Amino acid sequence: MAENARLETKLISVDPLSPSLREIQLAAKLIRQGEVIAFPTETVYGLGADATNALAVRKIFEAKNRPQDNPIIVHVASIDQAKQCVVEFPPLALQLAERFWPGPLTFVLPRSEYVSSEVTKNLDTVAIRMPAHQVALSLIEQSGVPIAAPSANLSGKPSPTKAIHVMQDLNGRIPLVLDGGSTLVGVESTVISLIHDPPILLRPGGITLEELQAIIPEIVVPPDFSSDQPISPGMKYKHYSPETKLVVILDGKDRPVAQIDSIGRANGGQPLILCTNPRHRHDLMSILVGKTPKEIQANFFSSLRILDEASYDVGIFEGITFEGAGLAVMNRALKAAHDIIE
Ligand code: AMP
Ligand code: MG
Image (cartoon, rainbow, N blue to C red; front, side, top):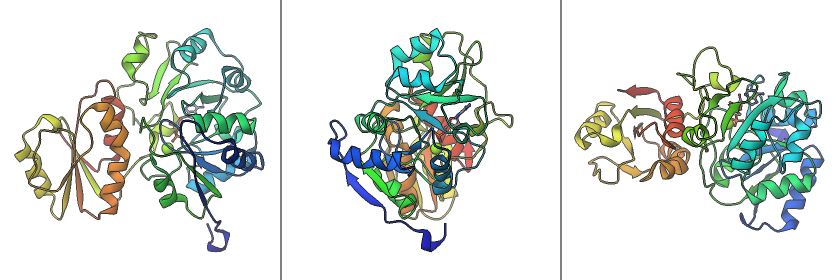
């Protein structure tokens, strides 16, 4: 973006539990005017625009340098609004929505004409979810339109879980950031395709595979979420990378500290251990990402940003289980990794 095209980015605090209508209406007005703004959801911060306005949606791609063929998730505030965005809302979608919405589960369904083809990049399907965050829900309601929103980071950077992360990436590129504090879930939503029978898991996320399997035992889980022939266009991009080299040690949480430290030293320079075992006492500089998979999930992306800010030469992530919240964490960790140690 040219320097003279820079905007002044306002950063406004909102109460995440009961946001005042004044701030929400200011943001909703910008959405109706076809602008792009950042707001908190329970997963990560979103970069939102009116999903029915092609010009507004194009601004999302510009602001974050998003690859043009990567479609965006549409956020709604009610099941009725979700139904407007699709040709058909099947009984399974209703059952899943009743169980998991509002919450971090996204469905891919046949798209209606109501949603701009800019959102879905000319696919005949649309990804849709209802976020579990008062700021997001109130913003969608006050805007009166569904809001298309990818994560509010520059493409390729770790997803933002705090407003400051959004400012680091997008200051001067968008008019407004609503600051609702840290996001609780910390990774993006789980995406499933309901146009396939049985449904397919397209991206692990805030709702665990085990929770889904309780309702859809037959759900198909692709063996490799970063295959060259992606079903979900977003799978083929290398996401979430810190600039600093990241080494992921599989099952690092359960390995001897000495082994992890020696891997850190072997990589040269100044390493930072992203520790996931509270009993580990490293000789090297370390931060505890979290004690449980959920906590590690909540803090994972901000740990990657700490790694970059403090100018370490390498980050060593102690890998965790692939079960429960571990699946989404390890999916993000392996996508971000420059090196994986088995
Ligand atoms: P993000 O915006 O970074 O949260 O990524 C959205 C994810 O949803 C990406 O992996 C997209 O490829 C995926 N997605 C969005 N729309 C569709 C769609 N119509 N069909 C399949 N995947 C989709
Ligand atoms: Mg993203």
